[in-house]
Image (cartoon, rainbow, N blue to C red):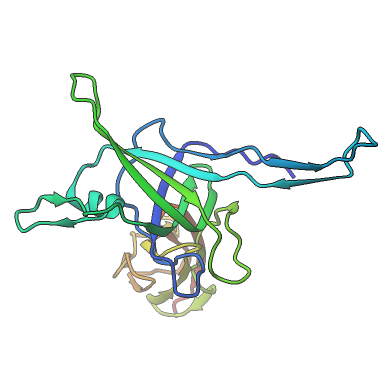
Length: 257
């Protein structure tokens, strides 16, 4: 298997951990990440050797996995962002007010890179600290660190890394018709989250034919009018909430009486 290379960050999202202790399904991207601050690290394993006085080599060796952390910074100091990452509340005048005690904030976290590497942390504890430099070239940052925790759900891995799959899309079955209009019906399913964009277009038509009229191009189901004799190809292009796209084609053959 080729080595998986994760390029720059596409998104970091978080969501409330379900009662079953699994990975959150409803995830929110809360803001932009300051360039050069996103990283995931694993500390070195701690090793314990069982040694005897009689022999130089260990009788047995045990290891414990090192702590895993996800870290990033944002320059968004909006009240909503501060509540999400530091707790507290928003006062009547719109100001953020910190809590009396540092809260324990546990959520699920999802990281997607631009090459489509998907990192899922079903349960992590979040800690955020201010790092603001008030100077001409300074940027006030909120530095966030997420420590990977053992999920409460049975059999759920604490960390899952895979390749993001583009949305599944179908433009329907090819049709042979004898009228000047047709109904198109496509389907689309997102790998993560929801389908947020749908667009029908005519990519091929008979020579000299005028462009057909697609009634509702942004819907999965639409009517098309203004067809003439010949072969048409229609394309359904979709995108999911993470910006990953896919396309499908359908052929319509018109034989007018």
